[in-house]
Length: 298
Image 1 (cartoon, rainbow, N blue to C red):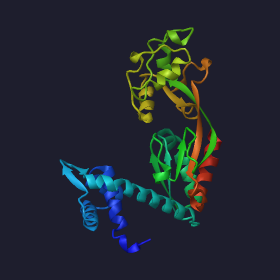
Image 2 (image 1 turned 90 degrees about the vertical axis):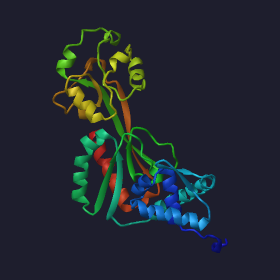
Image 3 (image 1 turned 180 degrees about the horizontal axis):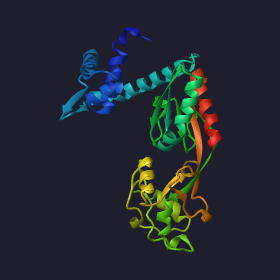
Image 4 (image 1 turned 120 degrees about the vertical axis):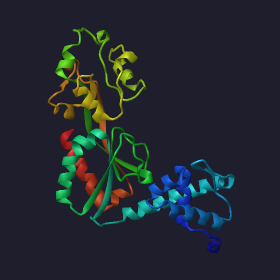
């Protein structure tokens, strides 16, 4: 390889890549943890190094030029290679001190992780824990997190997954709300019930329809993807919610709805980690610790 022909700086290329993906200098600077003037200088430096203009400003956004579009895929390949290098290097670290990023859904983060993390901190005070709270799957291959708690098994071959158990899901409501519903012989007669949904998709109604419910838009007049708000609305007697048994049974103001009909579904709980990071001592320690603790409550 003619190394003398490589006349650009990787940091400048990274600045270009993140700016292209984020669309604005301010968003890219925030993603990289640097100031906007510093980022702007790095992008300008790359343009000088390669001798072409990469962006045009359109309003508040930056739009790639034709030449910028051609270089973007190469920059992405470099970015992916850098991530793999970082994963491999991190995987070789045998230091117990350092940071570990855990991705968890809202309910796990609010109800389960505080006690688990408190116990982990007592046993491993040298490990810094960052928790990303999201119901969307974090991309472990792009290092958005080191470990993730998920309700589905990953399909990527380079991810390690351990099934921790099954989560039983019931409909919950207040005793007062459920008492006002009419006596019914099957779910098709519950035409007035309010179910606090996640969004405007039919995923919730599809699950219930398979069990004999006959629902319409009128049964979903409250929607939010934020599950702690769902819980608060349910406690106010505004409808029923999907909630895990182990958490819902601990809420004194809620009871299982239609308990004689059984739970509405069961969801698997998986703990996932990139295989490179599985050889990292502190990541392995946190992975095994969370796996053991979560297994006890599922």
